[in-house]
Length: 124
Length: 241
Image (cartoon, rainbow over all chains, first blue to last red):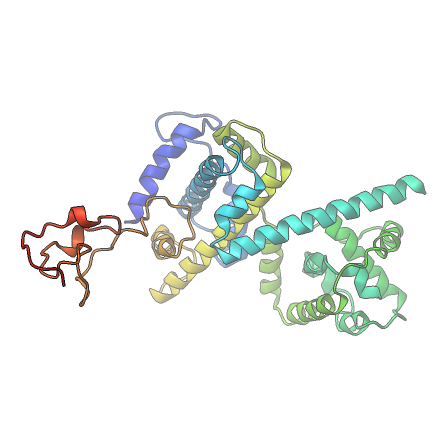
């Protein structure tokens, strides 16, 4: 059952992503290898996770982003991906929803703080 | 109130646990309770955390310049629309938690907070799919959600690993099993999962065909909610019950 989830996703990624140096069939440059390793360690895995595990997670993440982007393009303003669309698609999942809200709020605060900081620098 | 200054970014205050460890962590909760006569060194440490927030997880910024930090303090003092007590409590809880962690846990926590998907690469991926440029916030939101997704999968996989009695370096089979388990919970965007269709199973007792004919012989298996009368295969013309 798990293989069904991965094989269509695999083909889909090859169609969508040109990637860096695309060699033969199914060869795509690994986009998130380093960050994923750090993340897996942070979330509880070993300090050196298996490469195959990292690959599986990267495929999962890319499939997730791809699906979300496609869905976001089809709702709201067609052909564009907007934050409101992402928030709408995520509404059923409490953790992700809360995280998106937090991130956007914090981003606004940081921007305001930076602006105030720069203005203070400019003034003094 | 002093806490008004730090409120709102207190969740990020502990982005660098090691930097925090050196300071008087036991002193901080008492000070955040509103005691305005803080010792100078503690104040310096608290300011430096604010500057570290601005550098957004830059783990090398352990020795931020105090003058810049003090200037920041005077600026953010004006923003009073926070809830001081809630964040004071949260900061206190965080500091208690951090003081109770072991070295290994602190290292792991530091990596957990500091790791993220690079926004540029996520934006490039999304652009290659949607063929249109997005705002900065879109990539930020998507990167954040992707990180939560990785966290959920890895946690479930660790549960699976423990349940099967194996040791930590996660193997692909754990990850696949974790994904299988998480799919019905709706954590992945999936248009294949038809929630409206009747799932295979025994015909529940007392259920009748939509045509209301209780002698209808149509199987429960091949009926969806939208079948309606036309789907009824019943050939018995008995009076409606």
